[in-house]
Image 1 (cartoon, rainbow, N blue to C red):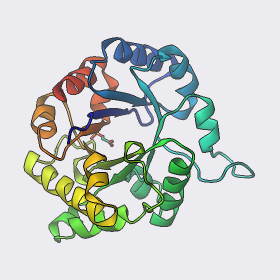
Image 2: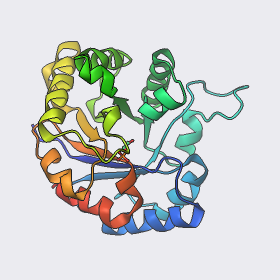
Image 3: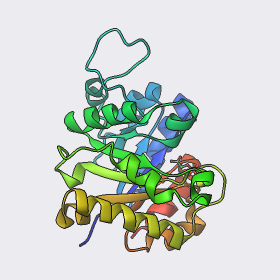
Image 4: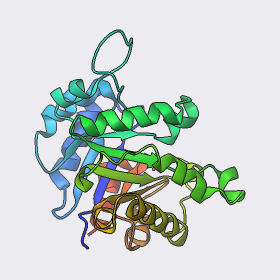
Length: 248
Ligand code: PGA
C-alpha cells in the first residue's frame, strides 16, 4: 500500500503578517512533488497566506475550529468560515489544546465530527504524557483518544492521525524511530479493527514532536509513519522543506 506522505507545518502562535506570507511563499516555491505539503498559520493570517500561496502545491490548514455552524460563540470560528478562506485541513485534539487550554475529550470529539462532516481533511492529534508512558498507559491513552473518531468517517483520504507524544513536543526530545513506529502500528491496528484493513492501510499517520531535518529520515522511513506534523522546524522554510524531502 503506498500512501502519499503528508508533511504539515503547525505554526502555532508564531509569525507576524509579512513573515507568514514570506514563509508560505518560500515553502510553496520549494514544495517537492510526491509529498502533500501543508501549513497551518494562526487564524488571523489564514486569508493573507491563502491568497499568497493560491497554489495546489501547498495546502492551507487551520490549527483549530469550533463545532457549531454559527451563532453566539464569542471568539470562535466555524468550519464554513475556514472553507471560505480556502482551508483544506484542520487540526483537532492537539496536545496544547488538550493540556494547556483544557479541552476535554468530549469537545475534541465534537470538533472532529464537525471538521469531517464539513468536507475538510481532519488531522486528529493523539499522544500520551510522559507519566502515562512511564506508567505503561500509552496504548490505553491513544486508544481512548482514537475513540473520538466515528464510523461515519469513511473517506480515508480525509482522515489523518497525528501521533504526538506530549513529552516530545517542543522539547527537542523526539521519540526514537522504534518508539514512534510501535505506536503508529498500534494506531493502524486499531483502525483496522474499528473500520477494516483496507481503510486502515489508506489512512496517513503522521509523527509529531521535535521532528527536524536531522531525525526526519529515520522516522519517515518507518513502515507506518506517513508524514509529520512539524512545529518549531516549520517556521524556517529550509528546515521544513528538508523534512519534506526526507519523506520521498
Ligand atoms: P514541535 O511541535 O515540532 O515543535 O515539537 C510539534 C507539534 O506540536 O505539532
